[in-house]
Each structure stands twice: as C-alpha cells, then as structure tokens.
Length: 611
Image (tube, rainbow, N blue to C red; front, side, top):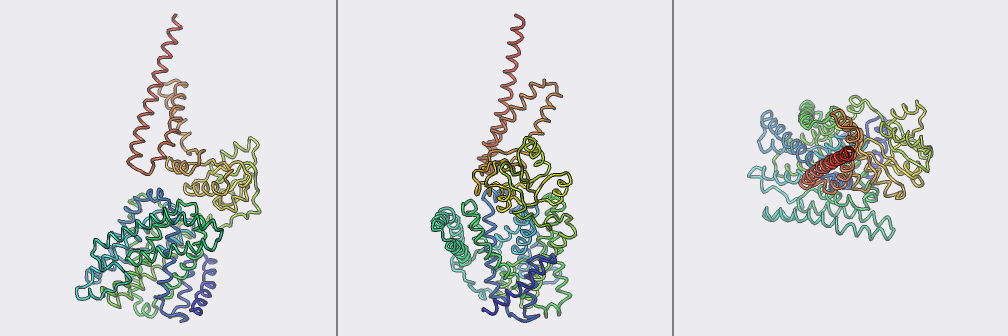
C-alpha cells in the first residue's frame, strides 16, 4: 500500500506541474499521470476499483465545500436553473441517448435506458475543479453549470432506485445489497427513513454542529477542529451511503446549512487540502482505468461513441443555453463544460453489471467511453480558453503584497467606470488612495494616463491588508462582479471591523444581499442617473423644475426606505410580491398627497396676493 502511494505521488509530482506549465490544467495532468502508471503503459499499478471508491471521497468533500459557498438564500435564487435547466438536460439527454442505443445498436430497451441515464450525467469533479481553477465558476455559465451538476447529483438517488427495476426478470435475484441497510423495508418506509435522515442532517448542522464547532474552537487546538470537520464529512457520507442515497448530496446539504456559520472560512481552509489530495487521486484512478487493449481493438467503435456522446450532449446543452437566453460566450462555455460523462456513471455501471442489465463487453465499452470523454473534458475547456475566449486576463501574476502602497485613508477595489468617479472625487479632496484592480488591460490603460493602480484581488486577505485595511478609514468596493463584492465585504467585516464599507450594488437584488449582510452604505449603479433622467422627463412634460425635483426627492427617499423593508422579505416570492404592491400603493399616495399639498399652498398664496 505504501509503495502504491509513493507511485501515485511521484506520478502526480511529475505530470501535474508539466501539464500546468504547458497550459493543460491540473485535472488533465492527473489523468495523464494515471495513464502513465496504469496497467497498460508502465504497469506500476493494477486494478483501480478499490482505490477509486476511496478517492470518491474527494468528490464528497468538494460538494461539502461547494455547499459552504452557498447560503440558502443564494441556493433559492438558483432554483429555476437547478430544476428547469438541470431537469431538462437530464431528461432530454437520456431520451436521445436511449433512443440512439435502441434504434441504432438494437439494444434491449432496458439496456438502452440504463445507458441513457448514466451517460446523461456529467463529471462534477472535473467541471467544478476546472471552472474554479480558471475563475469561471462565478460567471453565468459557471453558475448554470453548477446548477445542472447539482440536479444531476440529486437525480442519482431516483436513478439508483430505478435501475433495479430495469433488470431482466430472471436476473432480479442477482442484485447485491451494496451496503444498503434499508432495502428490505417497503418503499414507503424507505422513503420515510431517507427523508428523516436528510431532515436530521439539516437540523443537526443548524443546531448541533455549530455549537460543537464553537466549543472546539475555544480549545484553540487547530488540529482538533480539523479532525472534527473531517469526521463530520465522513460520517454524513457513510450514513447516506448506508441508506442508499448519494453521499455527495448529504455532505452538500450539510455544507449549505453551515454556510451561514461563523466557522465557514475555517472549515474551507481545513477541508481544502484533503479535497485536493483525494480529487487528484480520483483523477489518477480514472486515467489508470482506461483499457488500452480494448481501445485499440475497437478503436473505430469507441471513437464513434465518444464523439457521438460529446456531440449529443453539446447539442442539447447549446439548445438549452439558447432557450435560457445565455450570452454568446457564456453559452459556449456552458456547452463545452458539461459535454462529457461523469464519475457517477462508474457507480451505475457497477450496479447494472451486477444486475446483468449490461453484458460484460457492453460494460467495458461504456466504461471506456465515459473515461475518454472525461479525459476530453479539460481539453474542450482549453480549446474554449485559448481559441474562443480572447481575454487572457488571468495569465499575469498579482502584484506582491510588499509592492502594494498602503494607505490610512481610502482603499478602492475596482477602478473601472464606477470606481474612477469615486476615486477622482476623493482624490480631489486630498484623500490618499490605495487602488486594487483585477483587470490587467484596465491597469495598463490607467497607467498610461498616470494613475497608480495595483494588480490584485481585494478578496485576498493578504492583498487587502497590504493596501492598509488595518488602519484605513474606508473601503470602496466598486468592481462589477456581484458575488465578488459580497465576498470582499464579508472578508472586510470579519477581519477589519473598524473599516467602513461603501459598496456598489449591481442591481436591486444585489442591494438586498448587501443590506442583509450589514453593508449600510450602498449605491445602485444605474439608480441616480435614471432618477435624474426621470426628473428631466417631468420637466419636458410641463412640470416646473421645482415640482419635478421635489417629486424626484420623494421618490428617492421612498425607494431607499423600501430597499430596507423589501430586503427583509426577499426570497419569499409571495411575501415579496405583497410587499412590493403595498410599497407601490404607498408611493402613489405620497406623491398624490404632496401634489394636493402643493396645490393648496399655491391657492393660499394666490388668495393672499389678491387680498
């Protein structure tokens, strides 16, 4: 076992840095390392089945960390893309692939449907790892890809329940228990137990885990905190597995519940190294499991199947991206990100082989198709990055903390069209600025005009601190990424409580989020200009300048008050709708009342002048 661990580590140390250096990414590096040490090249390792089962904990930990990034309110925001986009992708892809297997290859309908279900799933591990590495996870395509992958992970549960029903009648008894402790109970009892376990995970995460983490944190033993975090993830994964549910789903739910905990960042830091190690091991096992003799014997068939799988999934994804009105570049990224098979296909293949729904040869061919398509996934994203995505802004390294000029006055994060206006005003009043921006092209342009701007991400604590966050009076967050603004604000609030924050709000809903996390000074980027235009419109319609400005001020004051009221109910569609209607009626009453008051004042004024 120790010898095998040394082989894995050596392969990763050699292959991954080389792959990263030539622009292939770490995922493809791990896959190539697996191919190199696999039984069909150097032959340093043998069958990977047992190792892969262990390495799948990397996927479990990754979804726990993803859950930590998603507050329930944000998850609720994604509900339409999770159910709509994710549901349509799984259903439509399953139907097309199943129909192709049945009509083109004349497979039994049970076999065709089983293959369709397993090939409809994409690789959560590869896609999220690559999107995070490239910094695309916060983009529209990244968020939609995450939604689809989340639905797929949830869909594994009913798929695992459905697959045994596809077994041919004389093979039903061939099913093994697979460690499922509740499979002998009636379906309604299994359902009740499953729902009860999921509810228990949510409640325990909210009311038990947080106090325990707080108690452990008070001991100031960092290693004990790490051990408990790992224990929590493993226990949830094992419990979910024992009742026949997806371990990844259980840990994801636990992560979501703990997303609002004050220990969220510490959990991320503690779990991240283990996740990275196990995910790397998982990718190596996928590479090592590729059956090259079978590939060479059936090269034409396997190539046709891999290309067909990628083309079918890409076509479905592109149509859905068009239906959901994604931007052109985001549409391409979304399409290429998910056009491959996934790790859960190996779990389903194991089950279908046991039930003899697929023959041994069909299982081997399907395994090969899934593994090669997963190998192609990072390549497709590299093609997008190098050819389709022209902006290579992340190639340059951030400025070093020691090179950043600190300030005791104002830090500005983001110096585009919004940040420059704020910066010029403050600078003209004599305030010293320390400016961070994450766009190399923007920085080069600004420096040509004599501006001193540093290249860095204000969401990184070391760079924010190097700008003077400990002593500065004010932080202006003026970047154009809604999620990044929230991230920076939370970081500053946690580590620099004396630092006042002024934040740019991308839209009304983003303003609600900022208000909810305690940022009081916010400005919506289009509100003031739209209000000024509205006042000009009133004047052109025949209203006096004084009346128009007064109406604009009343509207502005009412809107600011409404922002705080509506932020409290945002997320609850019914309550929000009722509150919006009430606020609109109140605004109408305020404006009518003001108009009547002005009319009375004018009448009194004329009466006095007449007398």
